[in-house]
Image 1 (cartoon, rainbow, N blue to C red):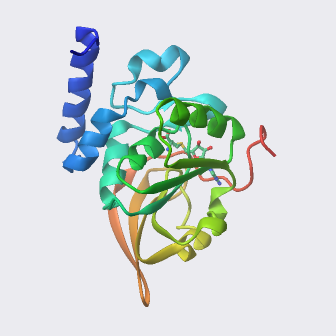
Image 2: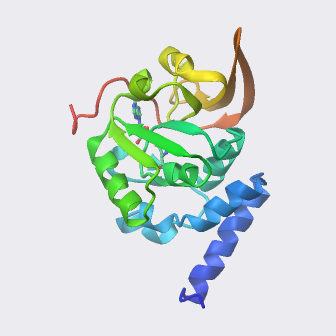
Image 3: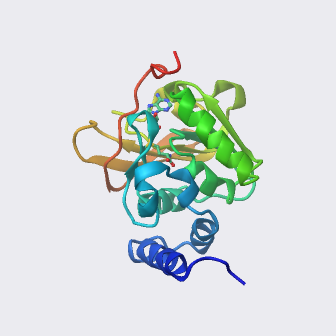
Length: 219
Ligand code: SAM
């Protein structure tokens, strides 16, 4: 029997309904998002709003993404259970936790050490043993672990970063928001072929910028 308070259960049902109504229809993605509670990834003042479909502030002046956008980006990756995935922009760790349910191995990197440390604690508490979280400048990817089947960038770049394109396997998929940080950006899906890359524009989005170099708390 569930020990959740009725209003928490109700809010979670509404959360899943909001995801479906905004186009998250992939059953595996929905079941991962049902299983991974967004609550533990949001601390302090905003924790009561975890089940609302909106981005919320986290430490280091960053944000946890809007759940429906997390779902749509995850869906756009077309993950298979054998995939090795790189996420650039750990933030709260929520997106990485969702990816961990759908892929074999997840590497997630952030330029802020504090975010990586906080997220790692939650991964341990939830026993998500297939996630490795590292502090690094994601503009350069993770050459030691490349190539990747899938790459997800959760901060906006002016163009898909060259090192990330190079670290994608042939047949691999990258999803990345592209555009200037203070305007509406476009979510792009890149598929690597033997002879080059195909680009497919998915939808308008708004993300914090991909910033080169490590955070001031880290460098
Ligand atoms: N995926 C996150 C989640 O589930 O909470 C949300 C990510 S937040 C919108 C964007 C993140 O990208 C921030 O945590 C920021 O520190 C990180 N970031 C920005 N530029 C970066 C870079 N060059 N390398 C690594 N992380 C970067």
